[in-house]
Length: 158
Image (cartoon, rainbow, N blue to C red; front, side, top):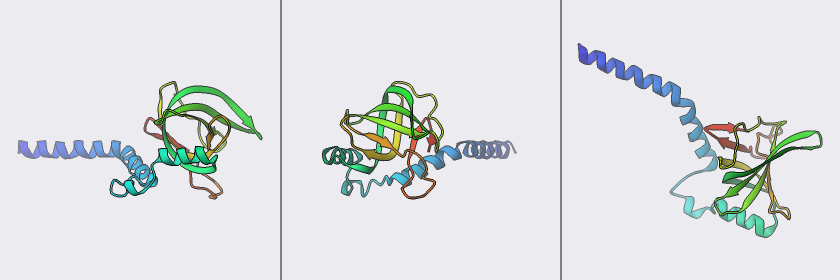
């Protein structure tokens, strides 16, 4: 009879753990699916770093990128055409720096950012003389572009 109680307790504990962790597990799964992380085919696709290098060389405008970066500088918010942008600079895995402009009209502010914070970011790259800027890191309400997002501390902003 004690074995049944222990077994029942274990099942209840696992169910509770699953219910608590499911949102995080689901987010990781959805993000991996969206970014198309697939070990079997990744060798045939250019890496995000290769796409960024090509975008820099070609002075690309409106290039979809997914990058990993670490915050190096948090800048004051900027106003353009009545829209506020959260601005910060990240250092990418290739050691290059990239400015991020996160639209606060379409997405919540990324709270708790500080130097060294690690981010996964999906947005549109626009070349400029300083190395470029990543914009559209939010859901596109007009559905003209793929959605962007910023992933920080197990939460999506976008």
